Amino acid sequence: MLRLEHVNAGYGDIQVLWDVSFRVKGNEFVVLVGANGAGKSTIMRVISSLISPTSGEVWFEDQRLDQVPPYKIIDLGIAHVPEARQLFPEMTVLENLELGSLSPKAKAHRKETLKWVMELFPRLNERQKQLAGTLSGGEQQMCAIARGLMSRPKMMIFDEPSLGLSPLLTQEIFRLVQRIHGEGVTLLMVEQNVKQTLAICDRAYVLENGRVVLEGKGKELLENEQVKQAFLGI
Amino acid sequence: MDVFIQTMVSGILIGGIYALVGLGMTLIMGVMRIINLAHGQLMMVAMYITFVLYEYFNIDPYFSLLVSMPALFLLGVLIQKYLLNPLLRIESIIPQNQILMTVGVAMVLTEVMRFIFQSDYKSVKTPYSSAVLYISSIAFNFPMLIAFGIAMLLTAGLFFFLLKTDTGKSVRATAQNKDAALLLGVNAEWITQLTYGLGAALAAAAGTLLLPIYYLYPDVGGPFTLKAFIITVLGGLGSTVGAIMGGLVLGVAESLGATYISMALKDAVGMVIFVLVLVFMPGGLKTLTKV
Image (cartoon, rainbow over all chains, first blue to last red; front, side, top):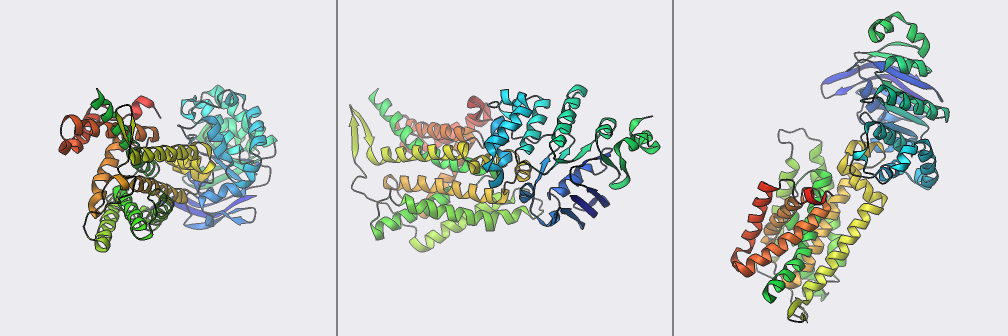
């Protein structure tokens, strides 16, 4: 469904990604793991066309994403839930969610989608009229995920959804992520929480210094010596 | 007592028009994070449009709103698209060279108008220019009253647009977090053009509404850019409700100054308030209203 082919990218003169290739098949749940500065978020920004690769190609179904302006990506069916939520703090929860369904197609189903999303996140339902900036960290993450769902995406990409959350809230967010996967949405997730995410995903890629160094089924990687040493501290 | 009430009434009426000027500036400030130093000059262009329409085509100034506002909207969109946005793509040592560009735009607009119309003072004398409405002993200048009414209608329209429509929400979203807006499918570049156009159209409305009671010359823009800046700072940068309050406060302050201190010093009163606000309430009136 999504594939990156030999992507090189960076900021200005600093190259972050070196010949990165990977793919996500339809209905799969794929995770990218790696330490700080491994280039995980940069990959997300390349997929969303916020940065253009210096070379290589990004394909989604039969569209080349790296030649599409960033505001058209969501219309193609990819919802990006960015790092650190990036909500609109001075707008209400409801307004934030409405902004998730701007495209004519999503707008036509706005009411039904809103009802579905509110069932999925009862806590947001209670806080519809509250300003997003006043929500707690966990609620803000839920709001960001809900906002992504409002576009009825074929694929969602999550950038560090557990950032700054307590272990308990992290588990709750991961349960929601799995539930969304269960609804038939293809997922790509970036996480530092290696152990937990490898346990719930289908496949994973390990990134190191902007290169893909390992690939495999989530549970296999959990047993991998290299992964154990680098991330799990065993 | 009557003098005081009269002063307040005139202050509030002119304040309504100032609010329009400030609203346009604060919108641009909120979305693009720049001070539009061509704001008063855009207003001046709209005043000349109104003047020409009245002088040569006999069109009532209030009807010429229908021409001056769209014309300035278009001018604003073009300025943003071809003069301001290209600057964003250039790395430079001065991060805010868009502001310098607005200064350039202001100068060009002023000199073009001077070239066409010379520096003479012009004004529009309508039959109702000096009509006055009395409520007990308080005088309401008729064109002022109409101007205030239209200004309030336009303000209400703007708020409806920003709060209730998807495009308006996209404008607010872009102001609060541009990258997130892009991810949600907001064409941020178009939003900046729309915002500058709207700001220019609001300035145009203020100019057109002011013309029957004011006078016009190419340099009239400068003082209004300054006023717009004072209003925006008074209200708290980027705050729409603050801009309305700021406009009213400035109008009343100038009016009080003119009555109780001296007509010649009325602009100075505005500046004194400006300085006081900067010292004692750096966040502007926004800190009181929180919007």
